Image (cartoon, rainbow, N blue to C red):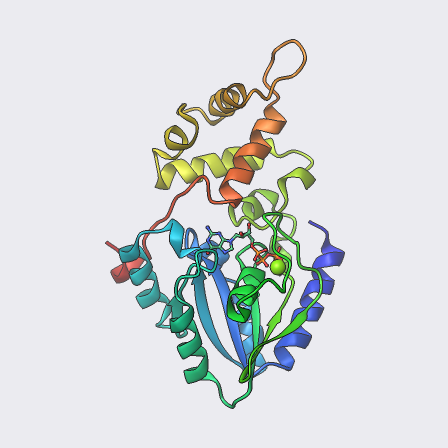
Length: 266
Ligand SMILES: Nc1nc2c(ncn2[C@@H]2O[C@H](COP(=O)(O)OP(=O)(O)OP(=O)(O)O)[C@@H](O)[C@H]2O)c(=O)[nH]1
Ligand SMILES: [Mg+2]
């Protein structure tokens, strides 16, 4: 993850926040705490902007868990959950935007970590493909203004990562915020990810690959062999196996979720 490109991304996001009337902070339903960006919230507060949390990728998490997160996050900000990909929740999102808009027409910025689905939400509000989306984190580089409705202008932004997290590759892998092919060593981050996935969803690997092991390194071996990711001589290409696992997490083929802490929990 390059510090320079992140500095530029923050600069652009700040500019977009300054010109918006309402901020949509997009988070990933599978890991709301890790994809909630407090630095963005602080910046929006400092600039005096109202903010709404949009829990996206709701298709990957059960409804009762989504409802608990909504209740939990609403202590801080109005919250909705949607699946931009499956086009579920548009009406609810539109109604909430209209309700929170300080004026009409309203300018709404869409912000968050890389890969949470910001550009997909822009397309969904517009009703057709106007913003490029990709399973590769860090896809959107510049901002883009889109007139979604007569009364609604939405602004796509690049994903931003708090400065203190930029060099913590394993953490960024868990947040789904970094392209695994850019990692010098994807194996250690993959092992941390495997342990986290297993802690919340012990069946995740059996469900996805039909193999499992308590030892993350051995699990990578098994996944690599299953996938035919072999080096010459028949040994497993562990690097490629690690990248495959990280990609499957990013694209929602490996799933976990958890409930909010405290009394919002189970
Ligand atoms: N399962 C699921 N996947 C989604 C959803 N919304 C977006 N995605 C997927 O998440 C990936 C990232 O989506 P983008 O819209 O490009 O995310 P972004 O936040 O704009 O990412 P950057 O531009 O890299 O910051 C893509 O592969 C989307 O198809 C959703 O509601 N459910
Ligand atoms: Mg984008």
